Length: 399
Image (tube, rainbow, N blue to C red; front, side, top):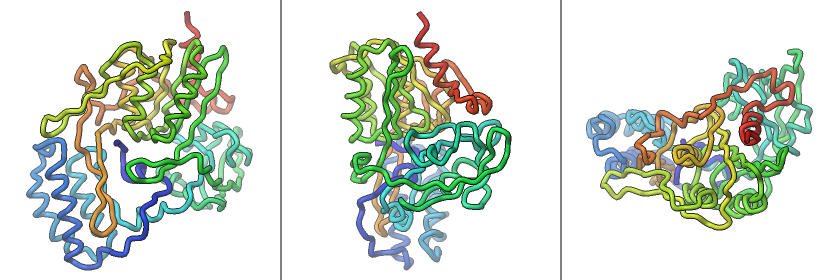
């Protein structure tokens, strides 16, 4: 199981229950700290801890953990210690942060990216409130609920909220005239969630035929409940002259979901990735053909928010020559990780494996570099053109 960060891991309903304890005393704080430190000490994929003296880190941060006056202070200390390792998939969160995702998941359907230094609408999910409110591709978002936004993460935090509530979005239209739109946070369907590592997570899925019969599949996370939808879509478009797998903004998930997709794309067993583990019990991710195999041309679309399992699948498809990759260099957060519940109800995400391609390329810290790099431009978006998607269509239409 893989996820780039704790908050991506739990960006949906979590069936965890109520936590009775809080880190309100030194003994419990120390127990939480020691659990985190010992888990990493035993399970982290690099026995040399990326050059960090892990015992010294323990001795340095333990007094701070004991002295922490609140859960937030404790976890700030813990995450500062984890950050010494300078890799992704190393993060801890208190029970309060976990519990805040217990509400039913909701979405506005608004996709944002930084384009030429401005927060720009780059995607609108069909039928979602943002589209219905009149927002358009290429519009610039300047404020949310009256507060200026500074970037992607800031905007995500401000857009997040309970289903049924509304959010005011201030934006600039194609003439840079300011407007306001009130957008509902629409409750997601019960059909859009399933279990992953004991958690109840939501993901969105979309598939269709494009011009010339080209197949198009997009989904937001690799969650097992999507397996049937993905494979039904692949089966229904098995006659397509070309296929586009759109993983832009897909933060990752379960590698087994990615492997099941790969099984439908290869005519013979193909090694896609090897995960190096600390004790030498490495994991080999190999595609094993499953019928019906799609034999047509394949393009994978990625961007700077494609992470983890998205990167692993894309890297394997690219290096094997099975897919042509278009978009922007991916997130560069590709480690195999597990989660561990902590004594106070908090959670630890920790990396236990380092994936490498069969040719030895490490994606962590590097990302997947597209065969064709294309930046989105506001002028194209305003004209209703997704230049990355259009480039994929044009590539597939070549003889």
